[in-house]
Image 1: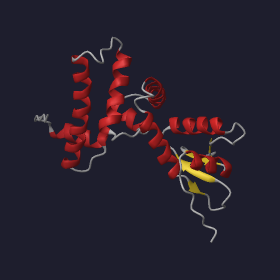
Image 2 (image 1 turned 180 degrees about the vertical axis):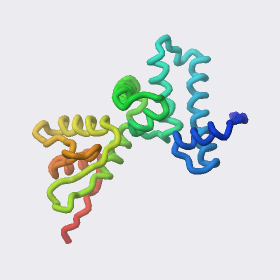
Image 3 (image 1 turned 90 degrees about the horizontal axis):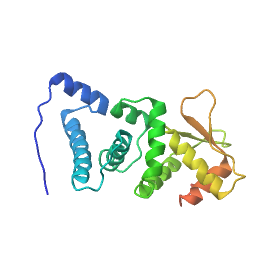
Length: 193
């Protein structure tokens, strides 16, 4: 079923939406608003047919974020700042929000969580000294989940730790990096030829 509708948006509001949604053109904004509309429609549709009827505001917001992950963020767990921007909340509230939906919707989001974490491991960069690995993480949930995976593999593995003096760069020891690659079936490039 195809559903279409038109919305009048004032220029000042359009500029604000572009800024918040990080859109550079009207077409990009239109695509983002269509994804948001799909997410909103799913929320209301499920409520009307009695599948997702909530009595607490927090539950509604969690389900809203769940739908945004599915439709607006293309099945990826968003960065904390993007959640802050959309929900008008602080970074601390955003982290709590993410943890809550990852627990509440863990089975629905299992593939999403796994693929997002795998993507994080694929983004790990080897340090120039060849002694450590680094990863820029914009969502503390990812670091925590990767550490949980390491603990499940072997409790003696070094944890992923924040690099001193940085906002969001984390250090990974080679042994932990190798185990994460094994866990996610990521081929390690051999650069010693």
